Image (cartoon, rainbow, N blue to C red):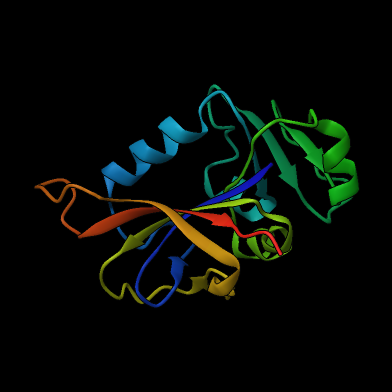
Length: 163
């Protein structure tokens, strides 16, 4: 099962200058708790924006068109067919970005985990357009706003509706 997980502002921005446009430790904790002990798939640019360090306690897979790309302690694949050979059939696979990778996986995703952050953060990278008529909101939880998490946010789980 492919699960896309991301945070976006009210304009759909997911990044700025190779990083997140906001500081939201609640969302980082949610991401860590949700993806730990699972496989995560990311693009090369996302991996490099994290300092080329794999996320701990996760099976990290980098999807890139660069045939000669290598990195330590991760699996590198070059297309979906190669990726599917690397993963067990019934495993939850978390797709963690960036924008091009989300666009590739959106048509075959089963679940979307979105953190909606209130505000406009003038981002330069955006989540691809979603046909929300294909998705059902299954869960929604308000995030806690406090001194460290100063932006209102909500965690939302969407499940793909059957045709």
